[in-house]
Amino acid sequence: MKAMVIREFGGPELFESAELPKPEIKPGHVRVRIAATSVNTVDTMIRELGEALPIAPALPAVLGMDFAGTIDAVGEGVTAYAIGDEVYGCAGGLGELQGTLAEYMLADERLIARKPKNLSMAEAAALPLVGITAYEGLMRAGIKQGQQVLVHGGSGGVGHVALQLAAYFGADVYSTGGGDKQLALIEELGGKGINYTTETVADYVSQHTGGAGFDIVFDSVGGANMANSFEAAALNGQVASTVAMVELDLSVAHFKGLSLHVVFMLLPMIHNQGREAHAQILSALTEIVEAGGLRPILDEQRFTLEQVGDAHARLTSGQAMGKVVVTV
Image 1 (cartoon, helix red, strand yellow):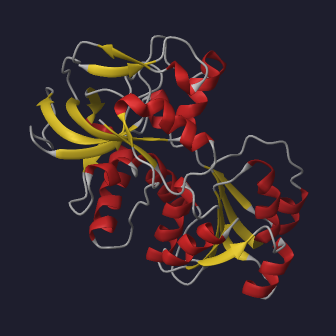
Image 2 (tube, rainbow, N blue to C red; image 1 turned 30 degrees about the horizontal axis):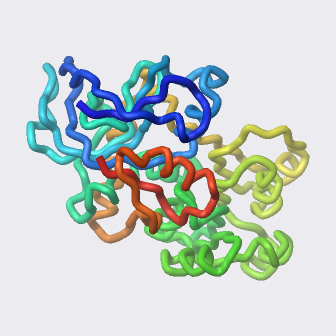
């Protein structure tokens, strides 16, 4: 099968085409003919940092985590799927798991679900990692109808899904963006846009919550921005963060009684524990998508498998809107 591999860690120019054996089926798994995959920030981090990350695969490596495709073989013990089923998931690209930048891959049945019928393969491939992350963060924060929710980075990969899910669950959703295009997308997806370059946290908390703060703050920006999340949260509020690798004074969180939920959705893949939860979330997302409550936004630039280096560069440039997708 055709695949794109890296033989050393570093820049996006290191991807090269290779012919690899088609993976052999094994119990509890399905083999998928991959139609599309998408690029996530963690993919670029693994490619750049390599051994500095404990989740990096051994070289030569096939990267890529998200996929959508068609099952062409079913392993022993798998009863929920059959050859010809269209599925999607986040099931490779780290540790010993072959990634999705190839024509075929093995996928643990506990990490996949039926592809939404109203999405193309490219759209479905954009959803798993960001969808699971957004869903898990909102669930852990106790999302419920009538709450005021702030999403930092609502035009980004995770953020644009969290915004839509929060609205689907009945919340009053606000979201930060840094320019006209970002704010227009936020409004299109059902959020109320906040320009963080011109409005202070105190300003928009006062304007939209009467100074009380937001019930839930979903922070898909993270890092130093977590201080803004703490400031924007209501007393006893909930903060969900996808990027918590930061040193920060927790005094504000203490005096507000905040709860912090750090979402690292790769844990079931890394440790082979609780993988069934990912299948359950993906199935829930399929229902929400088919009910019209969620649609992934794809970046305007599209890439083929051979152009995956350009796709990585596009994501790291910061110019992409929505998910960067690669067709196989």
